[in-house]
Length: 480
Image (cartoon, rainbow, N blue to C red; front, top):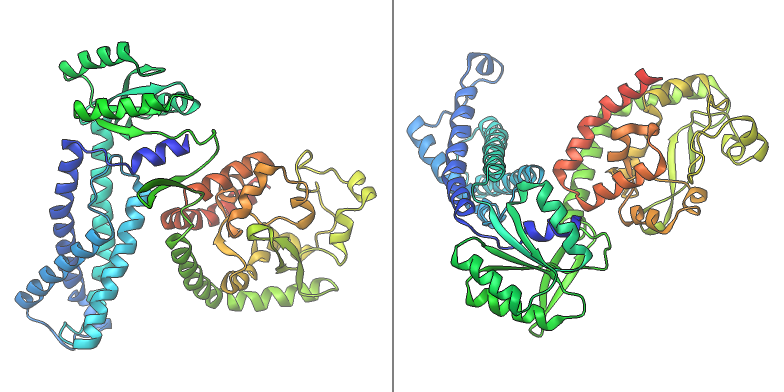
Protein backbone atom coordinates (compact mmCIF):
# COMPACT_ATOMS: atom_id res chain seq x y z
CA UNK A 1 0.00 0.00 0.00
CA UNK A 2 2.82 2.37 0.88
CA UNK A 3 4.49 1.49 -2.42
CA UNK A 4 1.37 2.46 -4.37
CA UNK A 5 0.86 5.81 -2.65
CA UNK A 6 4.49 6.93 -2.90
CA UNK A 7 4.74 5.85 -6.54
CA UNK A 8 1.59 7.69 -7.61
CA UNK A 9 2.30 10.87 -5.67
CA UNK A 10 5.62 11.51 -7.40
CA UNK A 11 4.56 10.50 -10.90
CA UNK A 12 3.76 13.13 -13.52
CA UNK A 13 -0.03 13.32 -13.16
CA UNK A 14 -0.98 16.66 -14.68
CA UNK A 15 -4.38 18.25 -14.94
CA UNK A 16 -5.67 21.78 -14.98
CA UNK A 17 -6.30 21.87 -11.22
CA UNK A 18 -2.70 20.90 -10.42
CA UNK A 19 -1.32 23.37 -12.97
CA UNK A 20 -3.51 26.09 -11.49
CA UNK A 21 -2.35 25.40 -7.92
CA UNK A 22 1.29 25.33 -8.99
CA UNK A 23 0.91 28.58 -10.93
CA UNK A 24 -0.86 30.21 -7.99
CA UNK A 25 1.82 29.17 -5.52
CA UNK A 26 4.48 31.37 -7.19
CA UNK A 27 2.77 34.78 -6.71
CA UNK A 28 1.34 33.68 -3.36
CA UNK A 29 4.82 32.70 -2.13
CA UNK A 30 6.15 36.06 -3.32
CA UNK A 31 3.40 37.97 -1.49
CA UNK A 32 3.99 35.90 1.67
CA UNK A 33 7.72 36.71 1.55
CA UNK A 34 7.06 40.42 1.08
CA UNK A 35 4.57 40.37 3.97
CA UNK A 36 7.21 38.70 6.16
CA UNK A 37 9.77 41.37 5.24
CA UNK A 38 7.35 44.23 5.96
CA UNK A 39 6.22 42.79 9.29
CA UNK A 40 9.84 42.17 10.36
CA UNK A 41 10.64 45.82 9.57
CA UNK A 42 7.61 47.00 11.57
CA UNK A 43 8.54 44.83 14.56
CA UNK A 44 12.10 46.21 14.53
CA UNK A 45 10.82 49.76 15.12
CA UNK A 46 8.36 48.93 17.90
CA UNK A 47 9.15 51.02 21.02
CA UNK A 48 9.46 47.88 23.14
CA UNK A 49 12.14 46.54 20.77
CA UNK A 50 14.08 49.78 20.24
CA UNK A 51 14.21 50.28 24.02
CA UNK A 52 16.12 47.00 24.33
CA UNK A 53 18.04 47.21 21.06
CA UNK A 54 18.46 50.82 19.81
CA UNK A 55 18.51 51.43 16.06
CA UNK A 56 22.09 52.16 14.98
CA UNK A 57 21.55 52.25 11.22
CA UNK A 58 18.25 52.84 9.43
CA UNK A 59 17.83 52.08 5.75
CA UNK A 60 15.23 54.36 4.08
CA UNK A 61 11.95 52.51 3.77
CA UNK A 62 11.80 52.86 -0.03
CA UNK A 63 15.27 51.33 -0.34
CA UNK A 64 14.33 48.60 2.13
CA UNK A 65 11.21 47.76 0.10
CA UNK A 66 13.19 47.53 -3.15
CA UNK A 67 15.77 45.32 -1.45
CA UNK A 68 13.06 43.09 0.02
CA UNK A 69 11.48 42.72 -3.43
CA UNK A 70 14.81 41.55 -4.89
CA UNK A 71 15.52 39.18 -1.99
CA UNK A 72 12.02 37.71 -2.36
CA UNK A 73 12.79 36.96 -6.02
CA UNK A 74 16.01 35.20 -4.98
CA UNK A 75 13.98 33.26 -2.41
CA UNK A 76 11.54 32.20 -5.16
CA UNK A 77 14.50 31.02 -7.24
CA UNK A 78 15.75 28.85 -4.37
CA UNK A 79 12.23 27.46 -3.92
CA UNK A 80 12.21 26.52 -7.62
CA UNK A 81 15.59 24.77 -7.32
CA UNK A 82 14.27 22.89 -4.28
CA UNK A 83 11.40 21.51 -6.36
CA UNK A 84 8.62 23.45 -4.65
CA UNK A 85 7.04 24.36 -8.00
CA UNK A 86 6.89 20.93 -9.56
CA UNK A 87 3.49 20.02 -10.93
CA UNK A 88 2.27 17.08 -8.90
CA UNK A 89 -0.82 15.43 -7.51
CA UNK A 90 -1.62 15.33 -3.81
CA UNK A 91 0.48 17.51 -1.51
CA UNK A 92 1.53 16.01 1.83
CA UNK A 93 1.45 18.74 4.46
CA UNK A 94 4.46 17.55 6.51
CA UNK A 95 6.63 17.23 3.38
CA UNK A 96 5.48 20.61 2.10
CA UNK A 97 6.36 22.42 5.35
CA UNK A 98 9.67 20.56 5.64
CA UNK A 99 10.70 21.55 2.11
CA UNK A 100 9.73 25.18 2.77
CA UNK A 101 11.87 25.18 5.94
CA UNK A 102 14.93 23.69 4.22
CA UNK A 103 14.61 25.91 1.14
CA UNK A 104 14.20 29.00 3.33
CA UNK A 105 17.30 28.03 5.30
CA UNK A 106 19.24 27.75 2.02
CA UNK A 107 17.92 31.13 0.84
CA UNK A 108 18.83 32.68 4.18
CA UNK A 109 22.36 31.29 3.88
CA UNK A 110 22.67 32.82 0.41
CA UNK A 111 21.54 36.25 1.66
CA UNK A 112 23.95 36.10 4.62
CA UNK A 113 26.79 35.14 2.27
CA UNK A 114 26.09 38.21 0.13
CA UNK A 115 26.00 40.36 3.28
CA UNK A 116 29.34 38.99 4.42
CA UNK A 117 31.21 39.39 1.14
CA UNK A 118 29.71 42.66 -0.16
CA UNK A 119 28.38 44.46 2.94
CA UNK A 120 25.83 46.12 0.65
CA UNK A 121 22.74 45.01 2.54
CA UNK A 122 21.11 46.69 5.50
CA UNK A 123 22.97 46.16 8.74
CA UNK A 124 20.17 44.68 10.83
CA UNK A 125 20.54 41.07 11.88
CA UNK A 126 17.32 41.40 13.87
CA UNK A 127 15.24 42.17 10.76
CA UNK A 128 17.00 39.41 8.85
CA UNK A 129 16.37 36.70 11.46
CA UNK A 130 12.80 37.76 12.25
CA UNK A 131 12.08 38.07 8.53
CA UNK A 132 13.38 34.55 7.95
CA UNK A 133 11.20 33.10 10.71
CA UNK A 134 8.13 34.95 9.44
CA UNK A 135 8.88 33.85 5.87
CA UNK A 136 8.90 30.20 6.92
CA UNK A 137 5.67 30.73 8.88
CA UNK A 138 3.78 32.67 6.19
CA UNK A 139 4.82 30.49 3.26
CA UNK A 140 4.08 27.32 5.27
CA UNK A 141 0.60 28.60 6.17
CA UNK A 142 -0.04 29.54 2.55
CA UNK A 143 1.14 26.10 1.35
CA UNK A 144 -1.02 24.37 3.94
CA UNK A 145 -4.01 26.41 2.77
CA UNK A 146 -3.33 25.36 -0.85
CA UNK A 147 -2.98 21.71 0.15
CA UNK A 148 -6.22 21.81 2.14
CA UNK A 149 -7.98 23.50 -0.79
CA UNK A 150 -6.70 20.79 -3.12
CA UNK A 151 -7.90 18.02 -0.81
CA UNK A 152 -11.31 19.62 -0.49
CA UNK A 153 -11.48 19.91 -4.27
CA UNK A 154 -10.59 16.23 -4.68
CA UNK A 155 -13.20 15.18 -2.11
CA UNK A 156 -15.84 17.16 -4.01
CA UNK A 157 -14.74 15.58 -7.29
CA UNK A 158 -13.09 18.66 -8.81
CA UNK A 159 -9.83 17.95 -10.62
CA UNK A 160 -9.96 14.21 -9.94
CA UNK A 161 -8.51 11.86 -12.55
CA UNK A 162 -10.94 9.16 -13.64
CA UNK A 163 -8.85 6.01 -13.72
CA UNK A 164 -9.25 2.51 -15.08
CA UNK A 165 -7.15 -0.21 -13.46
CA UNK A 166 -5.89 -3.12 -15.56
CA UNK A 167 -4.39 -6.04 -13.66
CA UNK A 168 -4.98 -9.17 -11.62
CA UNK A 169 -2.12 -8.74 -9.14
CA UNK A 170 -2.14 -8.07 -5.41
CA UNK A 171 -0.95 -4.54 -6.18
CA UNK A 172 -4.16 -3.95 -8.18
CA UNK A 173 -6.26 -5.06 -5.21
CA UNK A 174 -4.42 -2.75 -2.82
CA UNK A 175 -4.61 0.11 -5.31
CA UNK A 176 -8.39 -0.08 -5.63
CA UNK A 177 -8.72 -0.19 -1.83
CA UNK A 178 -6.48 2.84 -1.26
CA UNK A 179 -7.98 5.04 -3.97
CA UNK A 180 -11.55 4.19 -2.96
CA UNK A 181 -10.92 5.17 0.66
CA UNK A 182 -8.59 8.13 0.12
CA UNK A 183 -9.77 10.64 -2.51
CA UNK A 184 -6.89 12.96 -1.52
CA UNK A 185 -4.67 11.19 -4.06
CA UNK A 186 -6.75 12.70 -6.86
CA UNK A 187 -7.48 9.39 -8.62
CA UNK A 188 -10.97 7.91 -8.78
CA UNK A 189 -11.18 4.28 -9.97
CA UNK A 190 -14.14 3.97 -12.36
CA UNK A 191 -13.48 0.46 -13.58
CA UNK A 192 -11.20 -2.53 -13.52
CA UNK A 193 -10.35 -5.36 -15.86
CA UNK A 194 -8.08 -8.27 -14.98
CA UNK A 195 -6.45 -8.25 -18.43
CA UNK A 196 -6.21 -6.19 -21.61
CA UNK A 197 -7.61 -7.71 -24.81
CA UNK A 198 -9.71 -6.72 -27.82
CA UNK A 199 -12.98 -6.80 -25.85
CA UNK A 200 -11.54 -4.55 -23.10
CA UNK A 201 -10.04 -2.25 -25.76
CA UNK A 202 -13.48 -1.82 -27.33
CA UNK A 203 -15.02 -0.96 -23.95
CA UNK A 204 -12.24 1.53 -23.23
CA UNK A 205 -12.79 3.07 -26.67
CA UNK A 206 -16.38 3.84 -25.71
CA UNK A 207 -15.18 5.53 -22.50
CA UNK A 208 -12.71 7.60 -24.52
CA UNK A 209 -15.41 8.63 -26.99
CA UNK A 210 -17.58 9.92 -24.13
CA UNK A 211 -14.58 11.62 -22.46
CA UNK A 212 -15.15 9.45 -19.37
CA UNK A 213 -11.58 8.35 -18.62
CA UNK A 214 -8.32 10.23 -18.05
CA UNK A 215 -5.82 7.66 -16.81
CA UNK A 216 -5.01 4.01 -17.40
CA UNK A 217 -3.18 2.29 -14.54
CA UNK A 218 -1.31 -0.86 -15.53
CA UNK A 219 -1.18 -2.82 -12.28
CA UNK A 220 0.40 -5.83 -13.96
CA UNK A 221 -1.09 -8.87 -15.65
CA UNK A 222 0.63 -11.95 -14.25
CA UNK A 223 2.81 -13.62 -16.88
CA UNK A 224 1.50 -11.53 -19.80
CA UNK A 225 4.00 -8.83 -20.63
CA UNK A 226 2.69 -8.47 -24.19
CA UNK A 227 -0.57 -7.08 -22.84
CA UNK A 228 1.29 -4.28 -21.06
CA UNK A 229 3.00 -3.33 -24.31
CA UNK A 230 -0.36 -3.25 -26.11
CA UNK A 231 -1.80 -1.13 -23.30
CA UNK A 232 1.01 1.42 -23.65
CA UNK A 233 0.30 1.69 -27.37
CA UNK A 234 -3.43 2.13 -26.67
CA UNK A 235 -2.82 5.01 -24.24
CA UNK A 236 -0.44 6.68 -26.71
CA UNK A 237 -2.97 6.51 -29.53
CA UNK A 238 -5.81 7.87 -27.39
CA UNK A 239 -3.69 10.44 -25.50
CA UNK A 240 -4.43 8.96 -22.09
CA UNK A 241 -2.14 9.20 -19.09
CA UNK A 242 -0.39 5.92 -18.37
CA UNK A 243 0.81 4.77 -14.97
CA UNK A 244 2.70 1.56 -14.42
CA UNK A 245 2.42 0.02 -10.99
CA UNK A 246 5.07 -2.64 -10.29
CA UNK A 247 4.02 -5.44 -7.97
CA UNK A 248 7.20 -5.83 -5.90
CA UNK A 249 6.28 -9.25 -4.54
CA UNK A 250 3.96 -7.65 -1.97
CA UNK A 251 6.89 -6.42 0.09
CA UNK A 252 7.08 -3.23 2.16
CA UNK A 253 8.89 -0.47 0.32
CA UNK A 254 8.72 3.27 0.70
CA UNK A 255 9.56 4.74 -2.67
CA UNK A 256 10.91 4.15 -6.11
CA UNK A 257 13.67 5.92 -8.01
CA UNK A 258 13.56 5.44 -11.76
CA UNK A 259 16.83 5.73 -13.68
CA UNK A 260 18.39 4.27 -16.81
CA UNK A 261 21.46 2.12 -17.42
CA UNK A 262 22.50 2.21 -21.06
CA UNK A 263 19.00 3.29 -22.03
CA UNK A 264 17.40 0.46 -20.02
CA UNK A 265 14.90 1.70 -17.38
CA UNK A 266 15.80 0.54 -13.88
CA UNK A 267 13.56 0.93 -10.83
CA UNK A 268 15.40 1.29 -7.51
CA UNK A 269 13.43 0.42 -4.39
CA UNK A 270 14.29 2.89 -1.62
CA UNK A 271 13.76 1.63 1.91
CA UNK A 272 13.62 5.03 3.58
CA UNK A 273 13.94 8.76 2.77
CA UNK A 274 16.99 8.61 5.06
CA UNK A 275 18.95 7.10 2.18
CA UNK A 276 20.92 9.96 0.64
CA UNK A 277 20.38 13.64 1.48
CA UNK A 278 17.87 12.81 4.19
CA UNK A 279 20.62 11.23 6.27
CA UNK A 280 22.81 14.35 5.90
CA UNK A 281 19.97 16.68 6.90
CA UNK A 282 19.07 14.50 9.89
CA UNK A 283 22.68 14.31 11.08
CA UNK A 284 23.13 18.08 10.82
CA UNK A 285 19.93 18.61 12.81
CA UNK A 286 21.02 16.05 15.44
CA UNK A 287 24.37 17.80 15.97
CA UNK A 288 22.85 21.28 16.23
CA UNK A 289 19.97 20.27 18.50
CA UNK A 290 22.07 18.03 20.78
CA UNK A 291 24.61 20.82 21.39
CA UNK A 292 21.82 23.22 22.36
CA UNK A 293 20.12 20.65 24.62
CA UNK A 294 23.41 19.65 26.26
CA UNK A 295 24.21 23.27 27.13
CA UNK A 296 20.73 23.77 28.60
CA UNK A 297 20.76 20.50 30.55
CA UNK A 298 24.34 20.64 31.88
CA UNK A 299 23.44 22.08 35.34
CA UNK A 300 20.71 19.44 35.74
CA UNK A 301 23.15 16.69 34.80
CA UNK A 302 25.48 17.71 37.64
CA UNK A 303 22.58 17.75 40.14
CA UNK A 304 21.24 14.36 39.03
CA UNK A 305 24.73 12.84 39.21
CA UNK A 306 25.11 14.16 42.76
CA UNK A 307 21.75 12.75 43.92
CA UNK A 308 22.40 9.37 42.30
CA UNK A 309 25.76 9.12 44.09
CA UNK A 310 24.27 10.10 47.48
CA UNK A 311 21.23 7.82 47.18
CA UNK A 312 22.94 4.45 46.69
CA UNK A 313 26.32 2.81 46.23
CA UNK A 314 27.59 2.32 42.72
CA UNK A 315 28.62 4.39 39.72
CA UNK A 316 26.71 7.46 38.56
CA UNK A 317 26.26 6.10 35.06
CA UNK A 318 24.93 2.75 33.94
CA UNK A 319 26.58 1.52 30.75
CA UNK A 320 25.72 -1.57 28.77
CA UNK A 321 25.57 -2.84 25.20
CA UNK A 322 22.62 -2.13 22.95
CA UNK A 323 22.14 -2.77 19.26
CA UNK A 324 22.35 0.14 16.84
CA UNK A 325 22.05 0.69 13.11
CA UNK A 326 22.60 -2.40 10.95
CA UNK A 327 22.80 -4.57 14.04
CA UNK A 328 26.05 -3.06 15.30
CA UNK A 329 26.32 -3.01 19.11
CA UNK A 330 27.34 0.17 20.93
CA UNK A 331 27.80 1.28 24.54
CA UNK A 332 24.57 2.79 25.86
CA UNK A 333 24.74 5.31 28.73
CA UNK A 334 22.08 6.38 31.25
CA UNK A 335 22.06 7.77 34.75
CA UNK A 336 21.96 4.75 37.07
CA UNK A 337 18.43 4.32 38.41
CA UNK A 338 18.77 0.79 39.83
CA UNK A 339 20.86 -1.01 42.42
CA UNK A 340 24.21 -2.48 41.45
CA UNK A 341 23.94 -5.81 39.64
CA UNK A 342 20.39 -5.09 38.47
CA UNK A 343 21.14 -6.06 34.88
CA UNK A 344 22.22 -9.59 35.87
CA UNK A 345 19.07 -10.01 37.98
CA UNK A 346 16.99 -9.20 34.88
CA UNK A 347 17.78 -12.59 33.34
CA UNK A 348 17.77 -14.61 36.59
CA UNK A 349 15.02 -17.30 36.28
CA UNK A 350 14.18 -17.08 40.00
CA UNK A 351 13.81 -13.30 39.79
CA UNK A 352 11.67 -13.59 36.65
CA UNK A 353 9.46 -16.14 38.38
CA UNK A 354 8.98 -13.89 41.42
CA UNK A 355 8.20 -10.67 39.53
CA UNK A 356 5.76 -10.78 36.61
CA UNK A 357 7.09 -9.82 33.17
CA UNK A 358 4.62 -7.28 31.75
CA UNK A 359 5.75 -7.90 28.18
CA UNK A 360 5.49 -11.67 27.88
CA UNK A 361 5.46 -13.00 24.35
CA UNK A 362 7.86 -10.31 23.09
CA UNK A 363 11.66 -10.08 23.06
CA UNK A 364 11.47 -7.36 25.74
CA UNK A 365 11.32 -7.71 29.52
CA UNK A 366 9.63 -5.36 31.98
CA UNK A 367 8.78 -6.20 35.58
CA UNK A 368 5.82 -5.11 37.66
CA UNK A 369 6.79 -3.15 40.80
CA UNK A 370 10.46 -3.63 39.93
CA UNK A 371 12.37 -3.80 43.28
CA UNK A 372 15.70 -2.98 41.63
CA UNK A 373 14.79 0.70 41.17
CA UNK A 374 16.28 3.12 43.74
CA UNK A 375 14.46 6.08 45.33
CA UNK A 376 16.17 8.63 43.12
CA UNK A 377 15.78 6.21 40.24
CA UNK A 378 12.00 6.25 40.56
CA UNK A 379 11.97 10.03 40.23
CA UNK A 380 14.37 10.38 37.31
CA UNK A 381 12.73 7.48 35.43
CA UNK A 382 9.27 9.00 35.93
CA UNK A 383 10.38 12.14 34.09
CA UNK A 384 12.86 10.30 31.79
CA UNK A 385 15.73 12.34 33.29
CA UNK A 386 17.88 9.21 33.37
CA UNK A 387 18.06 9.42 29.57
CA UNK A 388 19.71 12.87 29.40
CA UNK A 389 23.27 11.43 28.97
CA UNK A 390 22.09 9.93 25.69
CA UNK A 391 22.47 13.41 24.19
CA UNK A 392 26.24 12.81 24.28
CA UNK A 393 25.67 9.68 22.19
CA UNK A 394 23.65 11.75 19.71
CA UNK A 395 26.56 14.17 19.38
CA UNK A 396 28.94 11.24 18.92
CA UNK A 397 26.76 9.79 16.15
CA UNK A 398 25.75 6.57 17.94
CA UNK A 399 22.14 7.69 18.44
CA UNK A 400 19.75 10.07 16.76
CA UNK A 401 17.37 12.38 18.62
CA UNK A 402 14.43 10.61 17.01
CA UNK A 403 14.35 6.97 15.95
CA UNK A 404 13.35 3.45 17.01
CA UNK A 405 14.03 2.42 20.61
CA UNK A 406 17.49 0.81 20.99
CA UNK A 407 17.09 -2.72 22.33
CA UNK A 408 19.48 -4.98 24.17
CA UNK A 409 21.59 -7.64 22.49
CA UNK A 410 19.60 -10.40 24.23
CA UNK A 411 16.32 -8.88 23.04
CA UNK A 412 17.45 -8.48 19.43
CA UNK A 413 18.53 -12.14 19.40
CA UNK A 414 14.81 -13.01 19.77
CA UNK A 415 13.68 -10.80 16.86
CA UNK A 416 11.68 -12.24 13.98
CA UNK A 417 12.85 -11.28 10.49
CA UNK A 418 10.39 -8.39 10.09
CA UNK A 419 11.47 -6.94 13.46
CA UNK A 420 15.00 -6.47 12.11
CA UNK A 421 13.77 -3.85 9.65
CA UNK A 422 13.92 -1.29 12.49
CA UNK A 423 17.71 -1.73 12.55
CA UNK A 424 18.03 -0.02 9.15
CA UNK A 425 18.35 3.42 10.81
CA UNK A 426 20.00 4.80 13.94
CA UNK A 427 18.03 4.27 17.16
CA UNK A 428 16.74 7.38 18.90
CA UNK A 429 16.47 9.01 22.31
CA UNK A 430 12.75 9.37 21.60
CA UNK A 431 10.59 8.03 18.82
CA UNK A 432 7.17 7.78 17.27
CA UNK A 433 6.40 4.63 19.27
CA UNK A 434 7.37 6.29 22.56
CA UNK A 435 5.18 9.36 22.03
CA UNK A 436 2.30 7.22 20.77
CA UNK A 437 2.01 5.08 23.87
CA UNK A 438 5.39 4.77 25.57
CA UNK A 439 5.56 1.46 27.49
CA UNK A 440 1.82 0.75 27.09
CA UNK A 441 2.29 -0.51 23.52
CA UNK A 442 2.88 -4.16 22.83
CA UNK A 443 5.99 -5.04 20.88
CA UNK A 444 4.29 -5.56 17.51
CA UNK A 445 2.59 -2.15 17.75
CA UNK A 446 5.94 -0.57 18.59
CA UNK A 447 7.56 -2.19 15.55
CA UNK A 448 4.68 -1.07 13.32
CA UNK A 449 5.09 2.56 14.42
CA UNK A 450 8.87 2.40 14.06
CA UNK A 451 8.51 1.07 10.50
CA UNK A 452 6.01 3.83 9.71
CA UNK A 453 8.58 6.36 10.93
CA UNK A 454 11.38 4.81 8.85
CA UNK A 455 9.26 4.69 5.69
CA UNK A 456 7.85 8.20 6.06
CA UNK A 457 10.74 10.11 7.63
CA UNK A 458 10.90 13.86 7.22
CA UNK A 459 12.41 16.67 9.26
CA UNK A 460 8.87 17.82 10.00
CA UNK A 461 8.07 14.38 11.47
CA UNK A 462 11.18 14.58 13.68
CA UNK A 463 10.08 18.00 14.97
CA UNK A 464 6.58 16.67 15.60
CA UNK A 465 7.92 13.76 17.67
CA UNK A 466 10.24 16.06 19.65
CA UNK A 467 7.42 18.48 20.46
CA UNK A 468 5.18 15.58 21.56
CA UNK A 469 7.83 13.99 23.79
CA UNK A 470 7.36 16.22 26.90
CA UNK A 471 3.60 15.61 26.80
CA UNK A 472 4.16 11.87 26.45
CA UNK A 473 6.40 11.94 29.55
CA UNK A 474 3.77 13.85 31.54
CA UNK A 475 1.00 11.56 30.31
CA UNK A 476 2.98 8.53 31.41
CA UNK A 477 3.52 10.10 34.85
CA UNK A 478 -0.21 10.74 35.26
CA UNK A 479 -1.06 7.16 34.29
CA UNK A 480 1.28 5.93 37.00
